[in-house]
Image: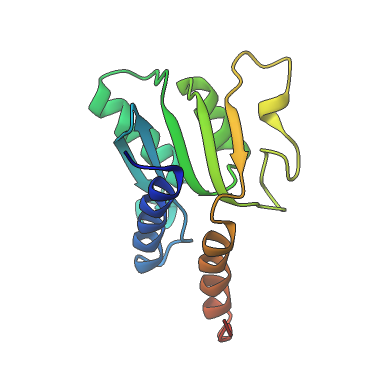
Length: 155
C-alpha cells in the first residue's frame, strides 16, 4: 500500500517534468482508493493556457479517466500550496483531501495568504494537510528560480 510520501514522490516526478519543459516545477496527482487516477504538471507557458496549472491538469486527467467531472472520494497531492484558481477547481471537483508540500506565501490560499478551504460560506470543504516533504518540494522551486536568475543555489 502506498503512503502519503510515495504519492508526493509521484507528484515531485511530475514537477520534474514541468521543470524539464522550462515551466515552474509544480506537479500533482489525483488518487482514488490508493490508485493514481490523474497526473499533471505546470504547462501554462507551453500550452499558452493560464489555467494549465498542475492541479488543473491532474483534475482534468482524473475526470477523463473516471468519466465524471466530480471526483468524490479522491485525494490530490501537489508539490505547492494551491492558488485561488486551483482551489476553486478542487472544490468544484469535490476532492475529499488535499496534501501539499511547500507553502506559497505569495499566492497560496490554503492558509498562507488566506484559507479558502476554511471559508464557511463556500459549499465544499476538502481536508487540507500542508508541509509534506516541504523541503524537497520547496527546494526544487528555489533551485528553479535561482537558475533563472543565473545564480547557483548551494545545497
